[in-house]
Image: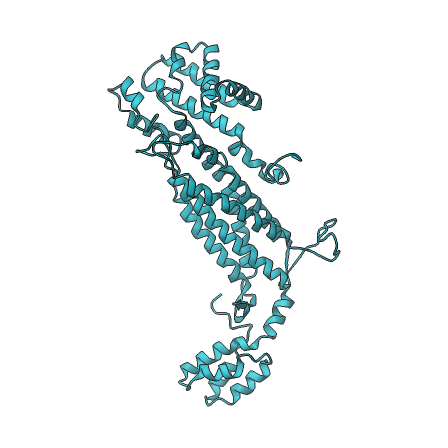
Amino acid sequence: MLKAISPIDGRYQSKTQSLSPFFSEYALIKYRIYVELEYLEALIMDLELVSNDELVQFQVVKSEILKGFDEIEAVKVKEIEKVTNHDVKAVEYYIKEILAERGFDKILEFTHFGLTSQDINNTAFPLMIKNALSEVIVPTLSSLLEHLIDLSMKYQGIPMLARTHGQPASPTTLGKEIFVFVERLENEMILRSSITLKAKFGGATGNLNAHKIAYPHRNWVDFANAFIENLGLERYQTTTQIAHYDDLAALCQSWMRINTILIDFCRDIWTYISMEYFTQKVIAGEVGSSAMPHKVNPIDFENAEGNLGVANALFSHLAEKLPISRLQRDLTDSTVLRNVGVPFAHTLISLLSILKGLTKLELNEKKLQGDLDKNWAVTAEAIQNILRREGIDKPYEKLKELTRGNTEITQQSLIKFIQTLDVNENVKQELLEISPYNYVGYF
């Protein structure tokens, strides 16, 4: 860990290790083997290459290979790759060696039959991403969302001075301001869930050439569609040698939007902390500053914001680069796609940091109340709109003259102003009851 080049495998390894089964080199090899074996099984069944007993035997061996695959076995594949200088071909040879040892000579050469490496890669990667999302990333985001919902309910109805352009504005409630992010995240999660990851599975240039020439009377398009569907994905129908990656680009862009929402949230919470609306629990033994002993810094939200930025930079590159390839294939997608787990790792680090930061927050209601008490001028909007209702001439201008740039507006000065208005006593009483504490709208 101390010699790791990337902090996601070094400093933050404890936070990202849950992604190793999906985005490591070991994971990629295992998923490739899984796709190859599933394809071989589907192929020998479709072509009726073995008896029922032999099929059962093969299924047993397939299960043993997948269940027994560990880092020692992965090293064996890497040793083969040193000779082949081709990672997918190394997987093919690894499988063939095991099948040969188990006496499956009859089906040996149907391993990787009619395929190119991208049929395996462009099926393995979507599966890896899909499983990482469903098992790690989305549950963590959902946990954060639930926490925000709880906070919005906890702080429901607590009045708070709003700030537009950084200046005091019509009051709001703390619970509503947190729920703004709940709604934004929920909306984007719905959009994200509508994105279907797809696989490319069509041979060297996407036309199933080898399959058709070898067995011209079989419907290989239906076979390929069914095979990919059985893996839980959808199949691109018309491709070059590689996937379009348009679906993956859409997924990356969706996560960019989710992360941007979270950056906005982190900055708001950071600002509320700086305004002392929230204090932070002091953790025994922690140091806030190497020079200033008193400091309790909002490091969790700063850490999250930084990692979200890194994630978005990488998501942006993936979304912009992957859908572009020269003619039927160039290799630029390969090295880029190997990094697909990195932005998800930075996203995960951020989600965990935000969750940790939220557990440290303690509301300082005295500070919220103090800011409301100092800003009675924000009720000017309420007063002038009631005066509009009552048909008073130029109410906006009257309140503007009274309040704009005047830092001495208090409850008493507003009471004095209201008493001078040419309205009936009931309206005056209505105006006198308005305060920064109750002028908060529906939330």
